[in-house]
Every structure is written in structure tokens, then in C-alpha cells.
Length: 107
Image 1 (tube, rainbow, N blue to C red):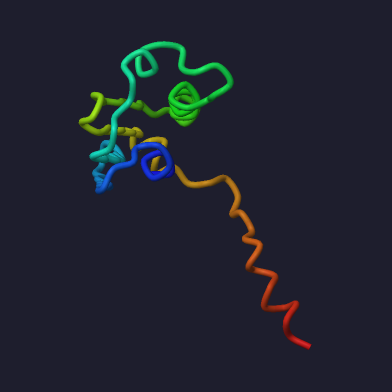
Image 2 (image 1 turned 90 degrees about the vertical axis):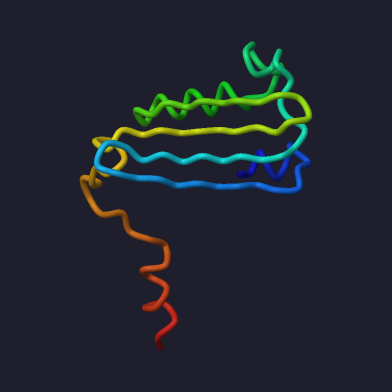
């Protein structure tokens, strides 16, 4: 969504979240200016992580990232995460920075 707001210059952004016993799927679609095909299928812009970084992070969590775009027709990004990764429980509960705030405020 950040990229859609920051780069697309579109008027509408649509977010869809679907989940079932097989997978979790997140789709973000905008009606913005689209992505240059050279950037979409190439190495990207020098000094920018962009799409390559998104693909790399998806792979790290066992997901598949698909990006569709055409100039002046918007962009759609879909992230599909297998249920075994998406719904896995954390080995140990993480403590929120908020959890200690109540105790600090009490005097």
C-alpha cells in the first residue's frame, strides 16, 4: 500500500485479503500510472530496492509475489502465503512495548 500511495498517483487503491485452509492471499490494486515494463521485468533502478526487495522478502517467508502492471493502467500486487507459514504460531510470545506502559504510568 505504501508504494501505491507513494508512487502510483492513482485515485483509488483496493486491498483484498482472503484466507482459507490452504493459503493467505493479499492483493493490492491501484488505478495509477503503472510500472515501466523495463523495471517490472528487469533489475530495477540502481540504488532502489523496490520490486526486487519485495520479491526477496516474500521468498524469505515462503510466499509467492506476483506483480501485474501496464503504463497508465495501474498495478496489481498479489502475495500468496501457504497456510503452513501464514498461520504458524510463534515459538515464544513477543512482548509489546505497550505491555510495560501501564506499570510505568502508575505511581
